[in-house]
Length: 208
Image (cartoon, rainbow, N blue to C red; front, top):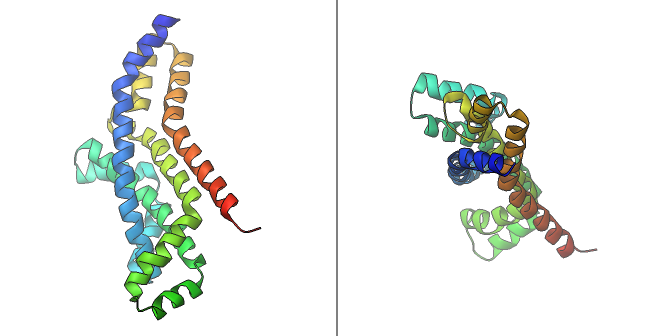
């Protein structure tokens, strides 16, 4: 049993690093892009709304195949592009919903102090919106990790591909699935805990 665990750990270690790298890089780019898209939605730019609709309604797998087989760039960067486009659209929609919930009185008060509309948006409205929808955005970060499991379809040797290779070599299918579940839990549970504590903090700080 111990030898099996060590064998699985040795097999999955490089792939774990690949999945972690893909998730972190995708998360950074997704944060930036989702903020830009949400700002565009708030400004009522139709092109941004159209782009978000397309990204939400086109499956993740299609994005991967289009990027890899039509654009023909490196598989790892295809994976990042597909994940970022997919999750940024959802995150931008969530953030835009938070922006609409920010009381107009806050913006009016900021404007009366002499702040410009741009400064009011980035210093007042956006931070409040982020606080309102932070748990949902944390879940989107978890989705980035989960959706990275599809990148093996274009040849990226991530956790899913590594587990499949282990199972094909050893025929220990149960061990492979359990190892994959544990590996993804290690990546996602800290983020889920962050969202839970964030939400609990909001509830404790809310007026009764």
